[in-house]
Image (tube, rainbow, N blue to C red; front, side, top):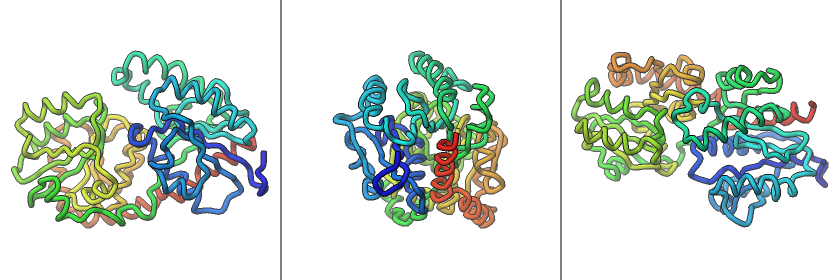
Length: 375
């Protein structure tokens, strides 16, 4: 259906997006939406979200009409029920509905775009609760098959989706993460951060990631205790508490690293950008990422990056990062390399980051919408 302006009406389902609680998937969709606003297109886009979303994202509220539910969507059963009642009633006449949370409601528009961030639950089922694993196995493959078009963040995820579900390869399209042009503009100054977080005067490594098992914080702690044991070197774990948080805390105590590991928890965007800009480098030893946005964020902010050779990370880092297998010896020289090759790594990183802007991401999701309406 077209709006009064003659533009095609599109609904974006953000009921799954509880601000601050869903990790990188939130930034992924927010940056797409910002990127779509950077180009002229024929869509009239309305966002449907849980109560409080507009307050959490005023930058989107300034651009789009946002229709909120009467309550927050922190309960998954409540969200599922609202998608099949409230959301369906609100969006049934839209030409297209984009579901950004990886699953499709039982009642879905004939033209439905589904964003699938990853299929980690198939590669690492042990990192999911039994209840969530059953839910994902029952709903995600079925949702992929029912969707008109599936948007994924990387070629790695695209191939995984096609292989796991047998869907037509033509209906799975890559929409990369995109960094907004303003990233880092308001970054907190280095001297403020050193005082605020007790970083001292020495070199600092940064790992922006929640303490989930697959993020592999323990690997970095073992490196700090054995290979990266210079007393002035500190590492900042900038991320919220995940399922492995207690294990990480215990390992820090066991390895006597409490004075060298800084754990501020989830930090605001200005502090995060400032920490990355001032860092010797960003280390990202994750076992699984559908994309790994912190790799490109670091490059855009001028920090060298070292990441694992798992899942999508080699694809994302390209030749602009240090990509290594996950063993201690392979990572032993990372701090020295970051210092010695800093100028070259930063230059390559800036160049690489230009391929992952919010405009590129926005244009890619608009192409998905066009494909969906043509099917």
